[in-house]
Length: 48
Image 1: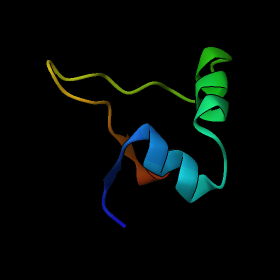
Image 2: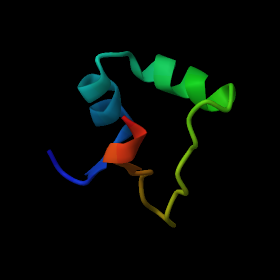
Image 3: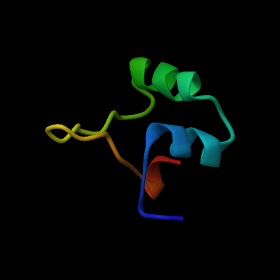
Image 4: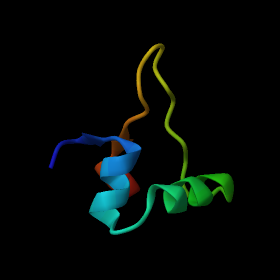
């Protein structure tokens, strides 16, 4: 597994839905990584 994951890959690796990850972000349980200009957010293995 790579060191950075998209939200979809993070959700799949954690055995949950993408909307569950977004729910955790809205509740403040999971930090939302910064989005690079013109890029996609990347989550680290520590976010699993």
